[in-house]
Length: 310
Image (cartoon, rainbow, N blue to C red; front, side, top):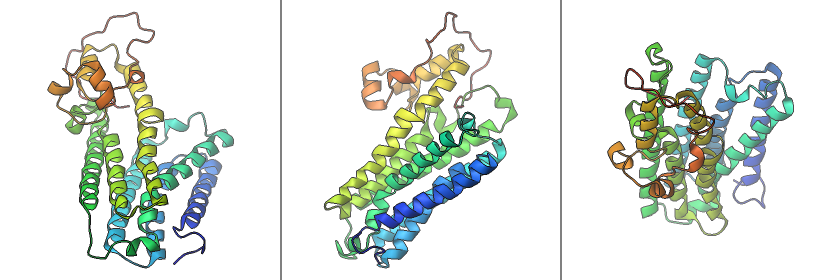
């Protein structure tokens, strides 16, 4: 079913629902001046768009079922985890300079609406009524298999690393240490690796039905990677971590030997030349804050470090 006859992909209703959801949650958060619904609003919005477009199509083709289940599983898992985490933490320091300023606070919610809509494009296109008849019901492509595998790898990476870090930070014995357990031993940000990978997987599945405008779905993994690699993800966390631990020799050694994103053995990553780390492993120069305003020499910690992500 099409809500608007001229909109064969149901993009308009998805945009309206996204703006409506984010505006409603913004009013609650701004009025009460708290952060507990912020990330929950983002994750659940993905779920709503996936289910909405699936139901509106009414075609129930297996690929539509696949991508809808994938996005719903990811969205419920992430929004539930983030809601539980913020309830435990109390406040999100990302909004310390925004809670009292409605305009600044609104800017975040506008950006979140753009993020949800843009990243949801592949599932919106797959769930469009016309996509179900593009290939026969029994036809699958290599892209479906590759995309499905990447999604599973990404979801497992994100889920496992989130749980490992949450458990680590809840242990009082780890206070003041950086995260170096489980997947965090071979990647400084394995949760971000997982999120980027799973959205690449969803997009790859969607390429099986791509003809013209559907290729705009590539904006989904590109937007996700851009935010995490260059904007509010890794750069901010690297800065906080470096400022907190840069006087510890073990931390400096950990950072040199551990990939910022792609999980790799430290024995391999540590010997790679800087140019290869930058070009193939996302070790960008602006992730390094170790040398800023520092005239002291690193000190050696009395015991091995365990973790770092702020």
